[in-house]
Length: 328
Image (cartoon, rainbow, N blue to C red; front, side, top):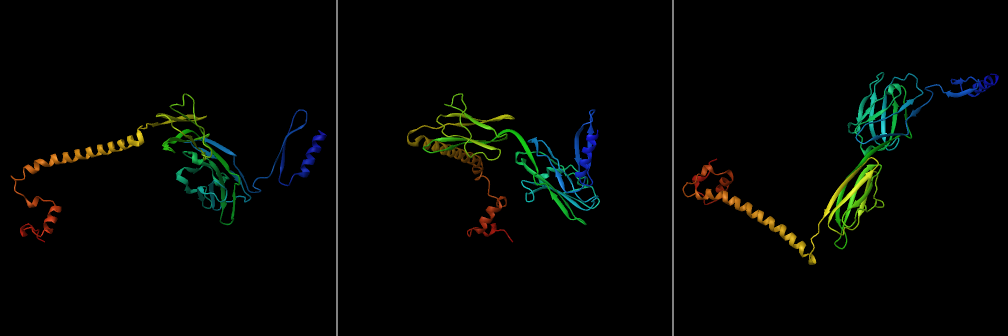
């Protein structure tokens, strides 16, 4: 017991004024779990977790609490959240509270998806993000500003990383021409973790072909190329990660002929079909107008039944009779 008392006395010598020591003594009278607590509200500080993880389409909460050296501050304040980098990153949320008010009026909420959950008057700036997307996967920084009688501000330097996870989704699949009348296929998918891409198709057997192209991964996007399509048929791109799997297919059918004659024939065939369709439309219109022309000799012309376009043309014709002219 005398040894424990001497240890407490030594701790009291080195602790600053305004601090206290919490100790626990077990049955053997040994000191355990000694914790030193500084007096609250002595300096600026912010507490945020290193990372928050959530799935795309869900909501996430970014916790942020702070302390400050201004006791009982009730002046105007502003709460701000930035994305990307501290101090200079774009703001995604901002609200302001008037003197003495605990209501922080929202002035900015990017796409209407950011909402303050905490109460800045109670040192809480926690933020809720709705309808998460992979583009939201970045680092966020909370900041508080005091105005009025006290002008002071503080912002977290390290921030909290929002990690958004998502099952794979193929965003583009295409067949493109390459050298020597050959073709290649490209497949681009997104997901987190980044998905692994593979191709399957004719002449590839049951094995999966093609790997991620060097330098083709950008953020959550991954692209894989099938460099040479040697056979006609269906080619399928598969994207997979730990959260799911996605597939998409393209079809390749080439017309084989000497010196491109089949391609020319195909082009002429397409033009001929369009010409036939045009002739059919013209014949149908002529058939509808034929009864009107048959009734023309039996029915005298009526100038009042003419449309305005024809009346204007008759007025411009110098050989028209004066009786058919419209009076002003």
